[in-house]
Image 1 (cartoon, rainbow, N blue to C red):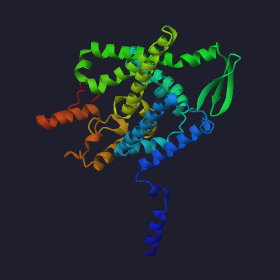
Image 2: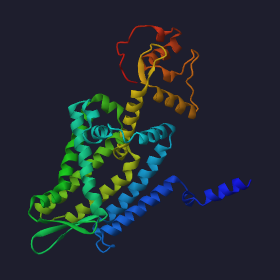
Image 3: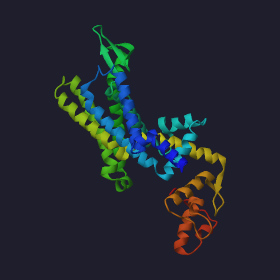
Image 4: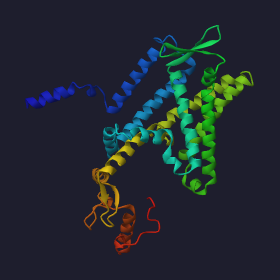
Length: 360
C-alpha cells in the first residue's frame, strides 16, 4: 500500500502532469522555443517588424494545427509502430541516401514519370525556399540593415554575419528569393492543374475542395507575391499597400488551412524516411513466405505488425483455412477473396494472373 502511495506521489510530481496532454506539452515547449529564438533574434525585442505581425500569428496557428494533426495521426497503432521502430533505425548507414531520395531528389516520383517529378520538384522546393526565407524574417531571426555606404549588413540571431554590396549578386538573390520561389510554385501548380484537368480519370476521381483548392491557394499566393514586385518596379508602388494586404491574407489563410488539408503531406514528408528504413531493415532480416504460393512478399516483422495492428483495432482476418489474410501475398489475397464468393478455391490454382504484380 505504501509503495503504491509513493509511486502515485512520484507520478504526480512529474512534469507531464502539469499538462492536459502530450499535445499541450509539445505545443507549449514549441512556443517557448520560438519565443526564446525571437528574443535572441530581435536583440531583446528591440527590432520587430510589425508589418510581418500577421504572418507571425498565422505561423503560430499553423504550428498548433500541425501538432494537433500529427499527434492525432501518430496515436494510431500502425503509425506508432512505424515511428517507434523507425526512430531506432534512424542511424542506419543508408539513412542519408534514403533521406536524399525521399526529401531532396524525389526519386520515388521519378519512377512515375518525368512530368510528375518536375511538377513536384518545382512545387516542393519552391515552398521550401519560400519557408526558408519567410520564417526567419517573420520571427526576426534574420534581417538586413543598411548604412550610407551602399552596403547591407546581414544580421542573424542578433549577430552581424556578413556585409554585402546593395547592388551585388548575394543581395540580388536575397531580394528575389521569394520571387524565384513564386515562379517555381506557379510553374509547378500550372503543370499539376493541366495534368488533372486534361486527364479524365483524374477529373473523375478528384474533388475540388480537397484536390484542387490547395493548388489554387498556392497559385494565388505566388501570383499576388509576384504582383507586389511588379507594382514596385513597373508601377512605382501603385496599389501596392492593397495588394500587400491581399497577399498577406492569402498566406495566413493557407497557413491555417495547411495542417488540415491535402497540403499536410508536405510537413509530414520526413516520416517517409522512417517508413523506408523500417521496410528495408526488416526486409533484410527475414522475408515472409506466402501461405498459399510460398513466394516471399514482405518481411516477417511487417507481417506480424500488421496482424497486431488489426487485432488492436478489433479487426480479425483469421481464415478457416488456418492462416491470417495478412499472411498472403497480394495476388493470392485477391484470389482468396474471389473464392469466398465463388465457392471455388481460386487461390490454390497454380496459375499466375495477367496482372500478377498489380497493387491494391
